[in-house]
Structures are given as structure tokens and as C-alpha cells.
Length: 235
Image (cartoon, rainbow, N blue to C red; front, side, top):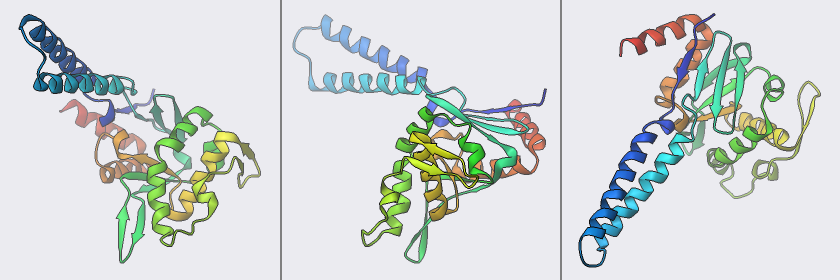
């Protein structure tokens, strides 16, 4: 079997630690308040609220997949808590950081962009559930792009609300969430040159480094995977 490289995202890290610290802290505050006379103080209320927030954050982190990406010789797999998508290496063209024009300068999105060779191939394997969730979670990134292209407030309606009908270049027709996702990728490609977005919080490193990882994997997957595995062993 070929080697595989699993990548863990920042979003899933330290979930157990948050739960333990929050739980222990909340238990200590409750016991302390029960054993001493008098009413609970403002400081105790604040500390108890912080512990509850830590427990909530820890719970959300534990719901995230342990590994967010898997690099294989011939495919990249992205895991989400509601599903996954798979990108064949032959369908991967290149990656980079999407940029939006801002006057004389360019604003970089806090995400990695992926350019596909064949959008139809990608659409045929993605499930509606994860497509719908990505539409919601990545809307703020897409709206950053739209706002820079609609400075006078006059934006095409299809940029603001994705159509539920889509016809791929191959002639294949899609409906529902898959069609909406396809229209989003089409508009994103028109505005940034990239079809897919990988937000920074699903990565294990900064967006520039991860983009370089993807391009190295495209050029020589076995060398990239073995190099990264060797680095992980020596850490």
C-alpha cells in the first residue's frame, strides 16, 4: 500500500483539555460556594461562566474530525463533521491564495484556493449535506470577494443567491444543493480564479505553507508524503 499523510486541523486541537479545565474549574467553584456561607459573588459568577464557555468550546472541538485532510498518492480527502469530499490528483490544477482588488492593493482571503481541471468530476462525488454546509460556512469569505467587486452596491443577483439549477460544461445537469454549490464555485472562479476554498481554521499551518504543500503534492506526491512523514517522526 502507498503511504498516506493525515493532517490534523487547528479547530480540533485541545478539545479534551478545554473540557477538563472547564469541568474541574466549574466543580471547584460550585463546591467552594456550597461550603462557605454567603451569597455567590460577581467574581464567582464570572469564573463559572468562563468554565461553562470552556466546556462548550471543548465540546465543539471534539465534534470536529480528528484528521481534516488525508494526502494519498492519487487523491486528497477533506473531512468535515457532516461528511467529506475527495479530489483526484489528476483533477487538481494548482492552489494559491485568493486575492481581491482593494484600490491599488490586493486583499488576501484567509483561505487557500484550489483550481480544478474538471468541475463536473468533483460535483459527481460530493454529497448534498456537506455541499450545503460549506455554502453556509464559507459564505463570509465569498461575500468579501463580492463586496470588493460591487463597490457601488449594484451586484448581480446570482452572486448573492445561488441558483438551484446548474448545467456543467459536459452537459450534466444538477439540482438542489449540488447545483447551488456548483454555481458558487463558478462565481468564485470568475472572481478569484479558484473553484474551491479551504479556510484557515481547517488547516494545520498557515495558508501560504499549506498552499505550497498542495502544489508539492501535485508535482510529486510520494516524495511530498514521505518527506512530511519523516518530519513528523523526528518531531
